[in-house]
Structure formats: C-alpha cells, structure tokens
Image 1 (cartoon, rainbow, N blue to C red):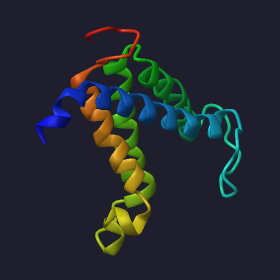
Image 2: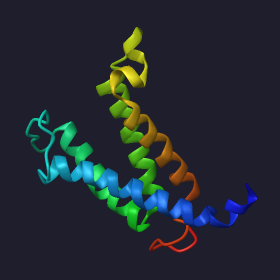
Image 3: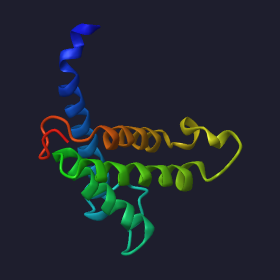
Image 4: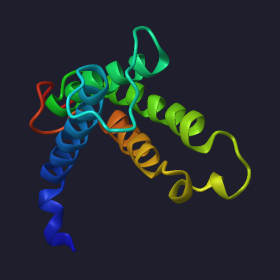
Length: 131
C-alpha cells in the first residue's frame, strides 16, 4: 500500500479539518442552539455542559483551521475523556462499561483522534504551517 503513502499528509489534513469541524458543530448545538438535539436540555452559563460546549465550539474551530492546534486538540482530548467517564461510562463495572452499550463510542474516538492531533500538530493546510 505504498501508493497511498504520498497522500498521507493530505489525508491527515482532511482528518484534522473534518474532525474539528464536526466537533465545533457539537459545540454550536449546545452554545448557539443550532439544530439542537431533541433530548438536549437548555444549558446555562457557567455549567459544566456550557464549558464543554465552549471547548467543543472554539477548540473544534481552532483544530479545523489549524491554529494553536496542539493545545486545542489536547484540551479537546481531555474534555472527551471526561465526557466519556462522567456521562457515558459513569464508572459502572457491568455491561455499561462498554462504549457500544453506553453510547460513548463518539467520545472515545474523539478523545484518541484529538490525542493524535495534539501529538502530530497542524500539518498541511493550517494557519500554523509545519507545526
């Protein structure tokens, strides 16, 4: 599969952009009320969900455009680790431990994708070239 090697940087940039954009959309749902999920209650400042929404919105946009990417991705990764533990897993040591059963798969995937982005940096097509 060496033929794909030459597209590695492009694929990473697309991953960084799309993951950041989707994460920012989650924040926009919470903070701006953009296409709110029917089960989402109104959130109030300065609740934990409000802060999480701000990290999603601002951090996601920063990751998408490649600005202070490492810092934004590291903070976003930690936010998703907390979200998974607190809102999905809830420290239950039964069948609800598994992400596929507690609906925490997106939080786990975001957590590890953002950890990769924090380690690798902006890459191509970002405002911080080569970082």
